[in-house]
Image (cartoon, one colour):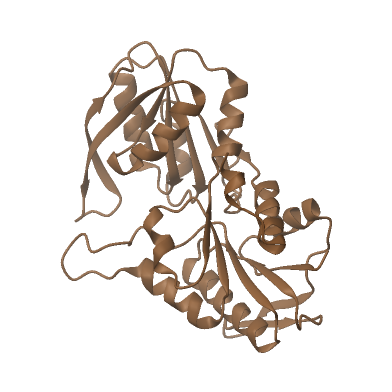
Length: 312
């Protein structure tokens, strides 16, 4: 198999698991830092004319991991790799995808430009915060979803009287897709975000029937868990019998774990697109692997076959 998979420091265990599913060894490279903190990278094998995949989520520390990705792409470009695919399981700066207020940047587009200019030939993205980010790239961009993994898990649980809940209006499309596959009802949380206090929200209404039902909140990411916990509390106040949640990307920054522990959420199901922090030993948090799905996508890209078959 003429595929080479390399990894930076962001999530090497995921890259190694992907290689296991592909039946290959992870690419040999020197990955380190100089004493002043600058990233130092050297490819330790010949990649001339090879199909190379760089697995590097731009998760916290976001700036550091993003810079690693850019430097690695540049190294492969200068080493005459035939094709360079940036596999980005978590795309940092995705929340700034439009000008929602005066005099703010569109950081998602800036990062896309940097990746393209560094020399990537294509990108493989995973559960973007906003689907339009695909259009920010001037190179082919494949967008994968964690739904096959997460939905499969909840199907096995056979949750009774299930209502899938979108935590905000922007998540309705995702929640509707989950509800359809789980044969469940749909509800929406109406919330207002306070832009003066970043990350804080006020839940206004629950739109849909949740009384006496099992509520499953579906989101793309959980950061400080403020929105998630307030949504869970609102659902319980509206009569939900039990509350579960799922999120593809477990950022879990600041007081997130403590908030989840103290919340009505019975279980939060996430994936390993981001390495789970050591503090996340919570029995309420379950992590599922997306390595097999990413390996299949990498194989499809390499073989020039359809990636969309993985969405089913």
